[in-house]
Image 1: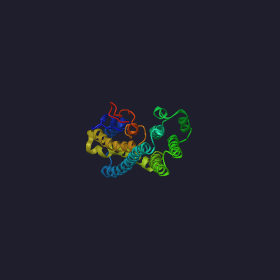
Image 2 (image 1 turned 180 degrees about the vertical axis):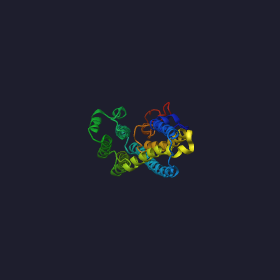
Image 3 (image 1 turned 60 degrees about the horizontal axis):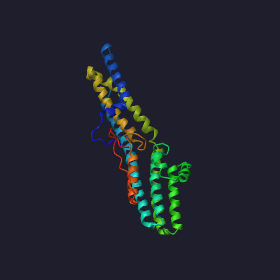
Image 4 (image 1 turned 90 degrees about the vertical axis):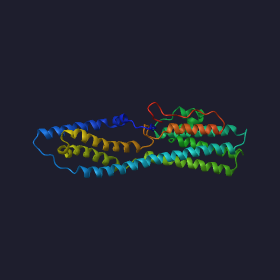
Length: 295
């Protein structure tokens, strides 16, 4: 996620420079053709076209932002639920008999959110997952199709073992299981966003209409702008291409890109809070890199 206060025009141009260069070349061709060949450019209702296209792109961008913000809300629930499960383990399980169980549950939850981060970004589990689990437990979770869900199932089994050992009662177990249900529901919502893209019409038609508008734009403006047509048409096209690109950037909040949610930073926040809950030393928070991007 970009956290700079000021926008970076170079980053925007870098993302759309190819269609922008093609648009500029086309504008120049239209302008030269207008002055060389004896013809009059047709009067196109570019204002009407632009207004309709702007409404269409605005609606699509709003839909993409809603997906991005829903993903952020689900990760907010995940952060809160992770704190709750660690606090319940600390308060419910007695010392010193269950001190190791407390720590194992906390480490499993940290491993779980990192495994979920990797799954949502379509990456294999990294060292942040493997270092927090014993080898036999890591192998058991990695053998599952859904690694994060396998780790969460293992946490549920640890809670049931604690109840059988007499460290917690059935009411406390039910309370901790309710937190695990909240975690599973949040994961399900994230997987729904990841696995359900915007409908094909929302993805294809805006792209088609935007590029078609950029092709027609210099034809409708050349008699008015004349030699300034390449400049004016390219600037107008830049605006529409930028809005189109913004929708593409926000539609998947879990893609490993500079515009997406800072999953690494949120996983580190969970790790810090949970380790401090059980009185262990925690790492430092993650900050933005030199480009102003928080991952």
